[in-house]
Length: 304
Image (cartoon, rainbow, N blue to C red; front, side, top):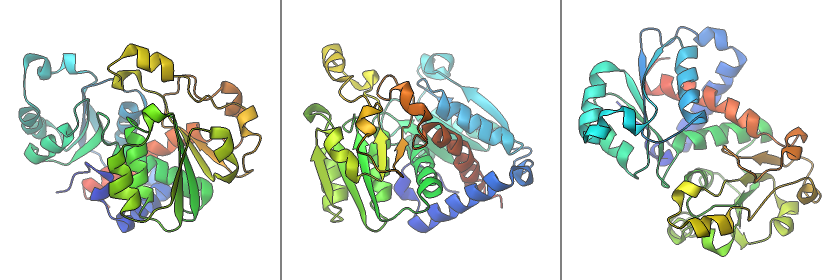
């Protein structure tokens, strides 16, 4: 039995197989409509989510399975003080696979240790979000037709952005990838990510505060939200929340085949006028998330 807690739990080869499986599901969804009949997914979401939770639920339902679970900690036994370990043991009696989101780093890892069914980390604090990373990789593979020889611009909250940390770890394993890190000083990529991933693997990267200067060389622009929930100080959030707002003027120097990604939800970091640009693929990206989660559920349940 396997779980997915960190994107590095899967090899590059396994990720490539997952992407190929998602491609097959996209091309012929009817073939997969009964694959999980009689199976149950438990969605244990201890903090709010729209896309990730509903994407998992839609994925399981489109595979013919059922969904149980909760969408906030207050409606679970956590409100009574039940431990993650005990919850994992109990849910293992009722479901075949768990998707867990938790505000505390490491909570899904603890759940996986005590559960007798596979556990999928659906986001743990500012640490990791591997299924968003799988979504991102599928998006890049379908939109750019490759996962190597790319210059990836990451813009906004690079300090607390778990999607950014996971994507860097994943993309660093492909050849000829360069990162451009675009953020204010206060939201720079953590030094441990630079040291343990970029420097350790000799991955070229550039740090800059200017989105406009970086734009012409980018193949991918990955915008992120400055997350109020990760700040201890409201004043710091208010000062930094509008650091980067992508609009049509900022795209003037961009490549014609640039793709603009965003894990969503957005607040105001991408102006709605950009939505009609063919390079904007964040809504397609959200749709790809359902298909890669379908492929992942099948893999972890060992259903071919």
